[in-house]
Length: 511
Ligand SMILES: N[C@@H](CCC(=O)N[C@@H](CS)C(=O)NCC(=O)O)C(=O)O
Image (cartoon, protein in one colour):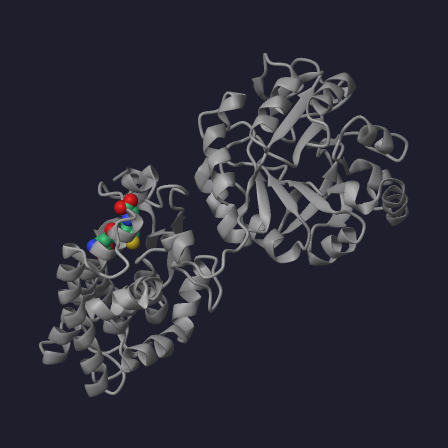
């Protein structure tokens, strides 16, 4: 473990998306213990943890907590640690302290361990069989029969205990024992529900009525839902969907996809650090360039076309880019959007040159003030369906303000639900660069991505800071699949090492 992780103050929970770590965030919420949730997206294709978790603990799994420099892994050990050091019965009543010598404490410890050592032990063979495509329709496989034996006993014991103890695992009422087991039983429930009834019958697997009631009661607890919200989910959202993938989801929601870009500067495809581009572009003016392509702009259009990566943007950064933009559009007619210097006198022309849509910003803000008249006129000229409004912005306190002229000038428009609602009556898409993080490959503006998911009602592409595939998954989670993501400097075709175009093509195909 690195020194920096040791030094953090308070509890940091390393939480893998859609995982049993939910038990720990839930317990922390019940304990009302302050903590920071460090979200780790799963690998979008394998659904496993990504390497960054190995920096926290060599096993590279979640949950792991780091509590003032003490690293604790394994759910059971984390529960015991939290109960020992962060349970204050004068604040919340969650049952006995683990230091007490009593049957209750012994039972509580039993249930905390039971969740992993019995329920998960017996359900996981099924999970792997399903994932590997080896599960049968009738439960006739030896592994299915062997695992069902243990699982049947576990489920019966939970059902009997709930009946005996008045609805919770311990007689005294709700507590950590329930937190530990609900999440495991939810996984069991989802797996059983995904199998044919013949399979369930032959293996004798079913969730009992008391257990179903208990799941409902526990899931309605404010702390459970607070834990889900910390993960970017809402009450009633299916946290297991992200783990189980398409095959077990009743309905598939739209997923965020990758949108490509071709940024042009002086007629050449480049990747530039956002906000460093100014009008005086000589040496020493602060312009930071991450990548200069040796390929022509049309090479990138053809590449995107070959993978059917639609709705990408060709952006003319400054003058002397018209020829390059034209050649990019000609290489894939009606496949790309074009932006940079678009106004009422040239918008039509760019559509005629092959742009699928035109992207407009600065023209809508004469003297940095929003002009509805100009937007209306442009909409009338090219049609709402052909117009994208670029509301690229910079952060000012807790607000995002539309920035123009290569993000140097702040306008009078705040990016929020109201402004986006107004604009969406006149355009069919938004393009939103988070100018402060653009080109830095240091991560996306998570809050903005989440807000855009709430505010946007038309297709929206976010750009800025994306490092790797995990960031696409993060945008998907945060925006509920409503916001698409552009990768620039991190992408291999632009000399980056964070993400490969092939991976993104693969993601888009699965989305
Ligand atoms: N027994 C461990 C299990 C930890 C575990 O396997 N966690 C899963 C998440 S549900 C994980 O991190 N998997 C990612 C991987 O193995 O790559 C515990 O309860 O903490």
